[in-house]
Image (cartoon, rainbow, N blue to C red):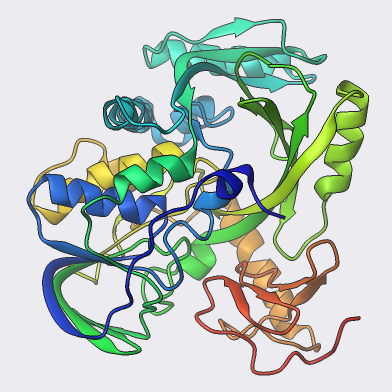
Length: 436
């Protein structure tokens, strides 16, 4: 289960931290969001250090399908209804600016950057597509309703001149000349200081880019987010579909080409729950691309917010000097770049025009909050073992990937108890039961 990106790209390696150091800004987390934040600060002349518990881009980034687009499903009609025209426009502008910044950084770089149109389709809800086009017209964006999606649908909304690339080849470029320490987990975080296994870092400001924030006592992220698994098959002998496609529903298919391969995504479910997985994708491949062959398979995990918008800014209203970027809702490429641009301004005392819509301190009064709280309560009261060390929820065995998964907040562990995905910060003390 290795993505096509990891097969083709070897990222540079960095030392672990030993001793003490001081810096203006500490960035915690070496995925694409952390790298871009450190890159942005460096370009602005701000001294910074990035630390990563494992290896750079060894988590979510290596498993993305790497679509660089401001089209995030059928979101803009929802944003207009939830936030109004001004904030919905901020979201669109931030993501379009992120796309433009990728164009700048990828110019002349060997990272497989290709301009492609993006499409969000529906199998049956044409009225929903029409509402999305009208919403985009209100925001002044040149989207259009089109036919001709690679399989039967009610139509699709087309975003022109979006892009795709190889995320690890890009990361190798973005990491150049940055001050990075790998295998350096943060064990304790205090005002202006982070403690690591063999050192300490003093910093005026700290940014947490660890996929799911790991401080429970601030920000209520354990209530504001949950995580979803999704699956990818890389298919040989499949056609070039001519663009990037995603279903307007949460459980539909995603498609894009990567060189000679077609990346078919879907089969998703809430972490710790049930879903179609690779078996569903294999059935779809057999139906739509019967001559294709599986070349690779992998899975990804994404943090989902209460209202579909990432949390970028101050970690909480009470944590001055502590910032975060999280909850990218399956759209980590443009969200990571938007986060770097917003945080670059906030960390240097500048006003950012898009920051209000992404504020982590915005209202939590959304229907998903009750769903998250109820699910967590049920799993906290489930009398089985093993338990997640994050907040004590009962873990579920995932036979497809042979892992222990937390249905409350999305932490994942190997069969032997080793940590795979946060927000847990360590592995299981005992497995509780053995799986054959």
